[in-house]
Length: 156
Image (cartoon, rainbow, N blue to C red):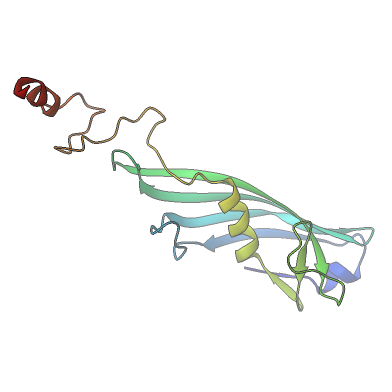
């Protein structure tokens, strides 16, 4: 999904609506590929020569609980709030205060992915108090205690 920035940088007061979808199913996230489609809506606008990008992102995530391995599916929300600048000799590509546009358009893939990765958890849980699986027999401890603990106490 690309944003044409030529008119945007040249005309104060110019606004470009942004609406579309980006497929993130190819993104490797700690050895998993949990991301699906991101729906993106918002706008880019030039106010007095300052170009800003404001997007709302809704991303479908499909993965497994890190403790009990049950399937999880949820929607992750994120916001993109960026100031855009054209590349020049003075621009610093590593700046965190603005996004550098190189050429006639900006590919929104990396901009949106960065916003999502900053907002998402590193570990996904089905619920905060998930007890996980028994390390001995693999029973789901959310459904009740297994017999492993009783056997250990009987052997002593």
